Length: 480
Image 1 (cartoon, rainbow, N blue to C red):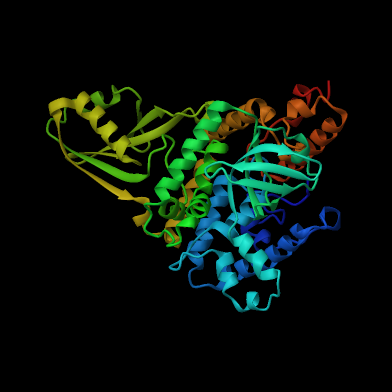
Image 2 (image 1 turned 180 degrees about the horizontal axis):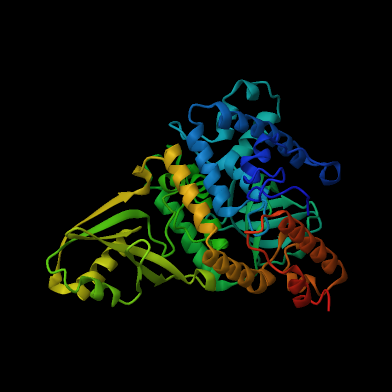
């Protein structure tokens, strides 16, 4: 574990800001390869090119006239997926997504595509331009591991059934994999001589999961064919739809609820949804109140409705389709009384129709339905600086609430003592903490990992939730 703080951790300088918004923002982009990690293959050349693309991307984020949209998309991804942090996505997924996949601005070109058109790329000699195009055309996708030898891994791409042969570089995830495993990974290069270009998410053989993934990929590609910004070159459909669907797939893999997704992803992927897998439309349902006497009592009697005294509105709590306990319930919508109107708000049209039916059934002739107003998230303007500051202030106030702290502490404890212990962890060679604790080498890696968590917790403010590392050690039988 590196001593460097995670992007979302408090900055060690003591400013009180997150590291990424303080000292981390001043760091030079660095994709340089330490000597011990060089492969002596063309993969090293790809990483050198990524260094140049990264520096170019950094200049766009600072000076480009469309930098605001680019920066917001990157911030949204970081807030949702915490790249580089424990439990977050690996940097090898985040950085290529930001540089190679994310489309922004009026031209809807990626950082890499803009780099290719710049004067810097014009100075490159072959094979530089060819490798740049390979980078630009790469994407994250699902693959079946069909076989392997001492030098190569053979994959079948889900969605196209295309055969990929990748050179082995003896990484831990290669050694632990078995034929039939399902990988979500970025491959780069030609199909007959490719390289793994991101830390993969690896799933053991599972017929039902494979069937679901195939169906999801087919839906992804079919939906892309309806997108008005689709390339005239239809052979790019699978590539482009895969790039646009990264947030959707990561959210499913990591079981992240998608109540507040990145707007640019909705605009271009058309796949970002709420926790019920419904396309996001902010919806308001209006009723005229005809007989107000028993309205509040009847609303409180609706199953799943709870009145919040502070906000003076009813919260509709509903069960989700998630299997993780901490995400098993979500707020499906809110209901408030404003003068002679009863207004319900939710984030999808199916939910709007559901809450409308619930209210009509419970309130009957006491109210009269008027209309539903719905807006696609893509049509919403970006938040102003003042609006964002207000949201940040309210978030800080919420996090300082003792009751909220107790709730977050419980969720943190439940996550580490239930889910985390059974997750495949990259730092452990993509095996679970329980499995790592059974071998001498695994225990060394596990102890190093726990020491890193402990060190970061010690640098965190007192009001940030923390876990008892020694309790985890005892659970894993590392100590008595």
